[in-house]
Image 1 (cartoon, rainbow, N blue to C red):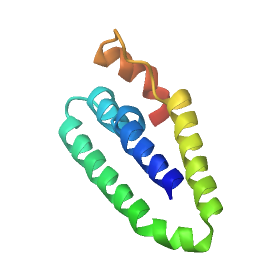
Image 2: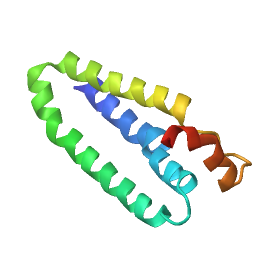
Image 3: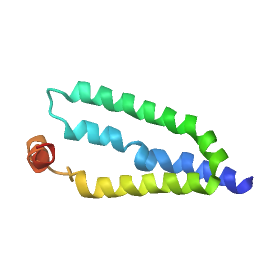
Image 4: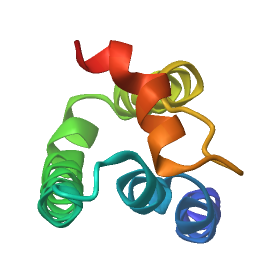
Length: 108
């Protein structure tokens, strides 16, 4: 029980500093100005829906297999890391137009 508590506390501390705020940064920098509000709202809704889905399914998954649940979530985290490394552009010191030009090939 202490190991589980320590893992939960580590998650609560690390998530907002890591992946938790990533969607806000991506939404604020990647969408064109004419759809930024709609896209940001959609992104916020999707984060809430996916958080609910994870919370809802967690107990069922733990009943299925605790190690399987861990490895499934670890795989999702690995996929997220690869996705961000390969497809999310660097925006530091670049204008919005430069960012849009660098990702135009993804949307076509």
